[in-house]
Length: 241
Image (cartoon, rainbow, N blue to C red):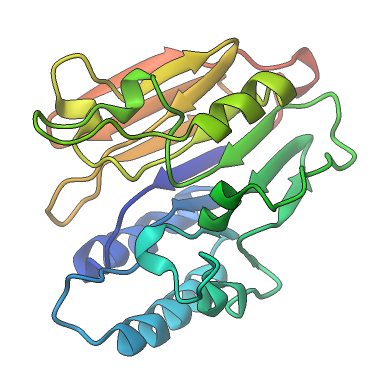
């Protein structure tokens, strides 16, 4: 079972085309927020329509799990109503918890930072890994490094949730440069939880992470290099195809 994770696409149509091209090599595609680009030249409503159509088209090839980022918000309470309205039988969005093949994935919306979102409950896969997706990475980790001169970033609320619920992996994004800065990298840990930020660069192929639950590995691929580490998975998942 292989999962592809990408963050901060920012309406890069070349990178979206690449995701569609390779999607069938994976059992699911995870999009960790900022699908849209508030600073772009394409009107935001047109971006929403195009992205919704892309999510639906992509879901005909593979299940899609997408969370909102700060560029995706369209409501006063930090919600991305257009993304919620894009939910479909194989498109899972903000607030969903999805379980299959002993894997559970919880999709945290950007508005979770308000503290009003109830804590998700696990589905039937209690003995398998639990993955979270949240656009902003946990604070005070090496996956939330900022360039010099920018204020410290990262979510302290997410750190507290991670320490309490101990998910297996948290996928994030938001801080594009973090894996490429001195002192930063694409992975770190909060307690025994692995936290991941693939980063974001311009180009036709996005920086991305491939999680292979069969092999028990997680690999970061970017134009600047490839890195791989062993993923500590519960025994019941070993050998799942």
